[in-house]
Figure (cartoon, one colour):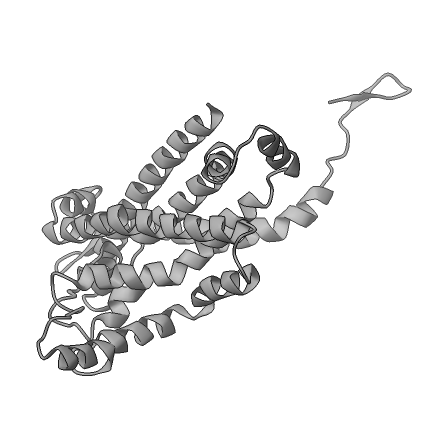
Length: 300
């Protein structure tokens, strides 16, 4: 925009930089901790470190190799199965807990809420170690139960049960976190809606179905997206449990473990960066589709 002076000339107004004084620090940190690592990972994925020629530009060859890598897809299918089974169970438990706390029928609801949320406050590594020692076949709760039964019945670290065992740990850790999201959404429901429902004769499940569940639909979408991202990023639990189940949890048990071991154990930084980028793109696409479908249902 131009401004006319008394002499009839036009001059541009002075640019106002005051807003950048507030947004600038965030922008700098965002560039350093988010954009720069992504750009560097993308740069690494376009090269290969060869015996002859050193670090050579290969274009999309690493991406083609990842898409045909059986170990990558083995880990991806595993975390996808984990997502399809563990996330619905966790979210349903969290929703039931939130509805129970929000109801006026639960005694000591504040204590109940704190007890459910408490596992989330436990450091993740500590939580996995706690369950790891309970799962041990030579020590802990599982071993004691097997001794009591006189047979090796409970085997959390077996190949057929290891994914369920990890799912149990993740559920224990994050039910309270998701419960708090749902409970916060429930507390935003106007009291007038409950009064109107009571006048209409609605009780119990009718109130839950007609008022509470529609009110938490947006929170359910958010919790689902967070859980999808967390499932595809599964790393901490299997990595900590690996020494206890070394023959079951492989170096490519999940895509994140695969990328980590390629980088730090195999010194294949370029290929590890490619695995991370491909997994990030898949996660972003699936999370976006879930968000799109969730918001469409909410608009209806």
